[in-house]
Image (cartoon, protein in one colour):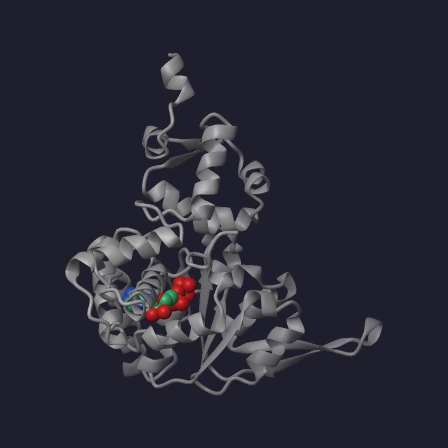
Length: 341
Ligand code: ADP
């Protein structure tokens, strides 16, 4: 089983509380994503000057890059209440109607994984976003009538790991779409230094850099690794060791949790090894890959693949995923095709 370090669905309560405690509260504390921050700042200021709710916002990108955090910041910066929901929780139009009709004026509605909402709810959302109105069906069969219901003006913040999965009419109704990118190492060092300060953890620059290089460009993973390193140092101290969260502690902790030098975890490696050894480097189709590693295709596509592409271990071709020469090298294997040729 892949460890919880990279999987957003595997986090326990303690992990979630820890995450909550480290969440930046306003745009000034939010590290990196300078472009998106500037765009959001403008959008929020303009709304404030016109004394209206900010435009609807779509946040797209892999898990752990700050989508939920940004939704909370949008609410916090404008002093607006926040309602949180998610696509999988909205399986009928009625679920959405109940949420929308109970919003207070100016509220921010966050819908995580919005691409997983029911189709019928999606259609209700179009009208709600555009006109702050929904039509509610009353009665059944031939006697059914639709009754219009006015809503309080609200701001929808939708988050998705797969903006390509959203139907165009929904995508078009967002005033602003932000594509969150993986963080570079200097940004991750900043995320880690901030988190260490908040935890009162005395950790040196070398140790921070070591974590930054191994967290898949993802602040959530950076924070989780930091927590593991803190635990490691704590236990070491209790056993009479130095108890310093230094680079040695980082390496030992990460080894214990199966995070390799590139930051690949067990699921990443399972995917890579499948492509390399079972399929001779590819191309391998997404569904074949998913079945081989026993994971959902959506997780592979939204969580695993973007990072592997970004660090240059695989490329996507029309016929499937293909391992690069760098991948063969990282896994210490011979590329059958190159050695044969
Ligand atoms: P997502 O909703 O995209 O999965 P979250 O907003 O839940 O990601 O972020 C996960 C964790 O990473 C949170 O604990 C948050 O504190 C941290 N985090 C995310 N982005 C940033 C950032 N830009 N600066 C500092 N911390 C961040």
